[in-house]
Length: 202
Image 1 (cartoon, rainbow, N blue to C red):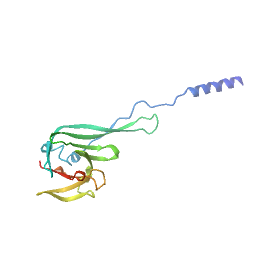
Image 2: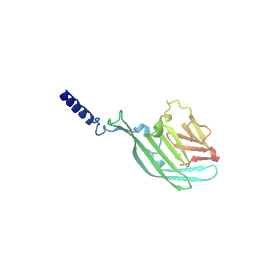
Image 3: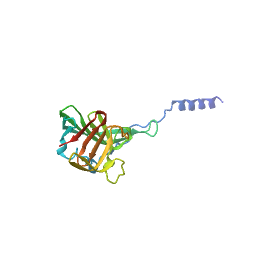
Image 4: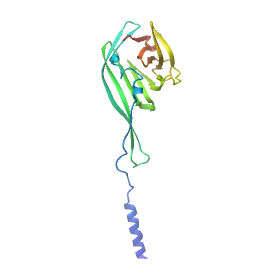
């Protein structure tokens, strides 16, 4: 009887001394890249003519932006199927054009991302002054049935084709509006809150 108790006590000590097995290290990272076709959906990363942008307003003001640099980076997300399991990391390419304001008081920036915050996929974010306009890059495909697709749009005496528009607050038509196309990028901004509009002249 004493021998049996000793064996049971030894087994109990062994069980209590065991630790949960944890995996060491992570799984290899997975990378997702923007395709050449996606990058070409705006002219900012492919056409050097858009390294300098000049906008004029209906109030007689001028903004001139000059590209400083294009940064390439990755937005990283991670997932683990259980506590202690190896994590799988996903890296989504981002291209960012940063512009310097060389005339006037404003801001312009373009970010094209395979994945951005909030779960938006293949997204283009255009910052103009105080507003950030969110565009899914597939909206620029004619085959995509986007509610805000325009066959053409005229500003002054210039006609633009295959145009879409986006709001400064997603889905809210009462907010500021930006018009863009594959060929010209962002060419017209209607700032409703300031009763001002801006037109790309070169």
